Structures are given as C-alpha cells and as structure tokens.
Image: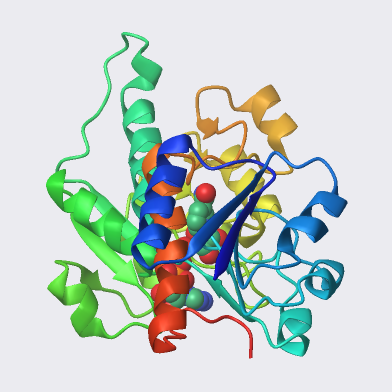
Length: 306
Ligand SMILES: NC(=O)c1ccc[n+]([C@@H]2O[C@H](COP(=O)([O-])OP(=O)(O)OC[C@H]3O[C@@H](n4cnc5c(N)ncnc54)[C@H](O)[C@@H]3O)[C@@H](O)[C@H]2O)c1
C-alpha cells in the first residue's frame, strides 16, 4: 500500500519523520514528492498511490485521472478549497481535512497580537493588562475553545456566542453564554472572531455591532477578512479614537489605516495563524493517522465530500 505525500511546499523534516513513523507502523509504504515544479511530476508520483496527503497542493480532476488506484486524499489542514470535491466523488475518492490541528496556533496568535498591542508594541510607553477585562468569543469552534482556555489563564471575563453549540459546552469552559452577536459585542471590550466565511457571515461584522462595543474596544480577527464589513469598520475608526483592530491578514482598506490610524492596528503581513512547527506536525501526523484508520477500520469521520 503506497501513501504519497505530495507537497509543493514541504512539511518540516520533523513532521515528515513523524508521518513516516505512523505509516511504517501500519506496514504501509511512504512515497515523498516534495518541491515538485510541474504537475506532470505529480501525475507520475500519484499514478500507483492508494492514498495521498497534500498541503495547499491542487487536487484537480486531472490529478485524479492520473491517480488510477487512489482511494483517499487528505488535506493536512483545516481549509480544503484546493480539493475538487465533486471530482473526488466522481472518482470514488474519499476526501478529508484535519480540522482542529492548527487551532491552538491560531488562538495563540490572537493573544500575541492582543499582548503586543496592550504594551504599545514594547515601545516603552505604559500599557494595559488583560486581567479582569471582558473578552467575547464570536463562534465557539476549534479555535474559539482554545481562546477561552488561554483567556481563562489571563483572568479575563469570558463571553461567547455560537448558535450551533450547546450552552452547556460554553458553560463547562467557564464561558458566559450570549444569545446574540449584539449582546456579545455590547458586553465585551475585546472580541475575538472565529466564524467561518460563508454567505450568512460575510460582511456580518459592521458598524452597528462595532459601535456597541465598550470603551477602548479591540476587535481581533484571525478568521477571514471577508466577515468584516470594512466600510463600517472605517466609519468606526473615524468616529472612535479608542478603537483598535488586530487582524491576521491585511484588510482591503489597509492603505487607509496606514495613512490615518497609525498605532491603532496590527495586520500580519501574511496569514500566519497556522504557521507554527507544531501545527505543521499535528496536521501531517493527523492526516497519516486518518488514512491508516480509514484503511484499517473504514473510519470516515473527517470526510468532506459526499
Ligand atoms: N488565521 C489562520 O491561519 C486560520 C487558521 C485556521 C482557521 N482560520 C479561520 O478561523 C475560522 C474558525 O476556525 P475553527 O477551526 O474554529 O472552525 P470550526 O469549524 O471548528 O468552528 C467554527 C464555529 O463557527 C460557528 N458558527 C458558524 N456560523 C456561525 C455564526 N453565523 N455565528 C456564530 N457562530 C457560527 C460554528 O458553530 C462553529 O462552532 C475558520 O473558519 C477560518 O476562517 C484561520
């Protein structure tokens, strides 16, 4: 049984070592295609593979046509828009992702930005503390849960809103349940955003919600820039000098921030929430384990195609 790891941008060597250990222990064979320069190389490598692990590599119908023996492809990571799901289904290939493996990395980044801002970029100017402050967790999924855990350690008062998660789950994590985004934003000085970007959530965080936030409001976005209504955000920045925006990815209106609101924002140069060695290892090893489990027991828990 051949498991191909096809990565245009390779995993860290330590991650490959651990993936190999999982595959060896199952009695399967690992094939590595790293740093490939043409899709032709991928076609050749995948031609006799039963399973494939990818990162951001495109798995198109052409790749699947070349993969005559492929039964399963796993994207090591949460997002899977690089997998052509209908084509996977048409080729009877199970497609999976590895949700939750980078969530701690993303949650830590939210706090890294909050701490850096709270101490004025370590400039020497007196800052503020997080202890005792209110934080609202907007969506209590994999990342939101880690944010709650870290916030607890900082002694923050934690609120959460997620209509798809039972109140008991939030309560068990020490989170006070809010019944609407309006309640969450109006109660919390800090709000950390973790909703997915979809038709319902795109541009859903705008002027009205942000205006309701208490004094010295800090909006932290490690989700997607699309969920923010940037027009409303700019209006708030114009009206409120006490408002700060921390984001893991630059907004489209970045130039306006740079021109007018120096010191009141942090934008990472490149989406880097999941960019840690640990997240890299976790996602790769989870992918290998899911493949082994699928072949040994038929477990399809993380299947994303129909
Ligand atoms: N910065 C990064 O590098 C990075 C990495 C991973 C994920 N992300 C982003 O973070 C988001 C959250 O990731 P996750 O792993 O926690 O996802 P997840 O799927 O585990 O959790 C998403 C949560 O959002 C909730 N939700 C959906 N619609 C909602 C709504 N309208 N209002 C409130 N809650 C709603 C769901 O119930 C779920 O609990 C992802 O969608 C992705 O956009 C960013």
